[in-house]
Image 1 (cartoon, one colour):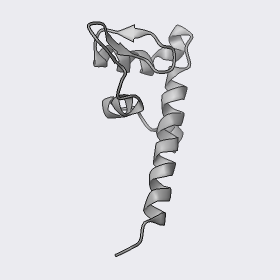
Image 2 (image 1 turned 180 degrees about the vertical axis):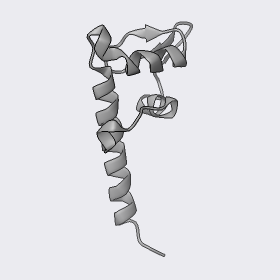
Image 3 (image 1 turned 90 degrees about the vertical axis):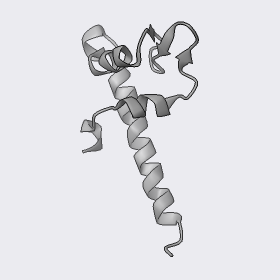
Image 4 (image 1 turned 30 degrees about the vertical axis):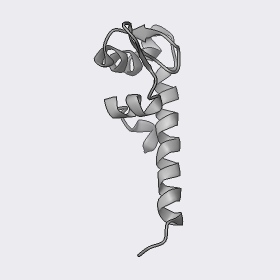
Length: 80
């Protein structure tokens, strides 16, 4: 189910807080290409397989890891 989760703009920004490249745009953390807007980066990620890249897989796996980590932190935190 989490493999099919869509990648949001928030997910992209969370992936790398330093991904904004000054005066250039946003960098895809998977293929390192630079895009002029956050929207164009999101479109690239959604259609990366058509371009011969696996960026969508990278971001989906990263999101799944965050979700797993979040659940583990919730389980470890004391219930009060």
